[in-house]
Image (cartoon, rainbow, N blue to C red; front, top):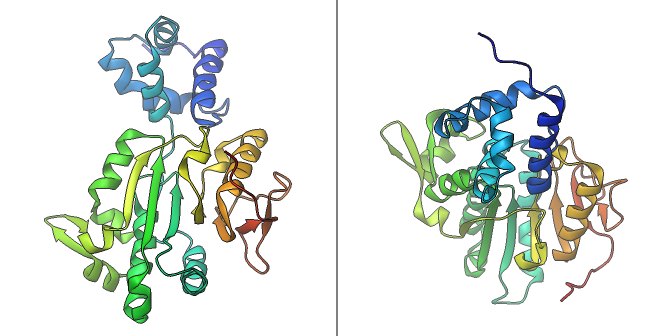
Length: 283
């Protein structure tokens, strides 16, 4: 027997929880995605269908279940050196920042919505290559902070272990052999490459000021899931964290134009933004 169609009110209730907790918008045509991704949760909780899940979520002490549902419905797509161009720009930008910073001042890079860590580790590989090309760069302390709303992907990012399929997506073979160690059918990032990286669970709808000041922020391919007011709030928050000469990288299909006045496009670069004017980090 096929399950009954999902009641529109139930769909609205479940997707409303996801939007409140993560900012993500789930379209009316994505009911099948809800059923598919939440099927294991329904089975574990012995719930008949999504209507029963909605009823359970309305009961007291259901916060943990609501968060688990939200994480299951959050997209976690990632690959190494995704879209290439932002990483080429970063490779040219970091030496300039290194020369402009005082000795002992760290460079801080944020991979927001880092998923399973490919973006953060791609940045770390670039840092290693820059240090090999310029010995002065080796003295510069660099912090790469990767954050994501989903606990499971943060744990995977911390582990730094990837499948053959994952490393084949965007990873040059010479880089793979030099920067990873093969373990049976999987590949582990070398400890010296992973050293600058730290991964934490964090919600972009939270207080971004808790993250501190950054020289570079990657917030790519996540804003496409937000409505315009949420995009504006997140981007304005990032602008407050960004150094005066800092750079924000967005995804190829994303823009800050028409969303916030706190950021301006870097000349000649698509998807790269700086602060419209130096913004003081408010207390």
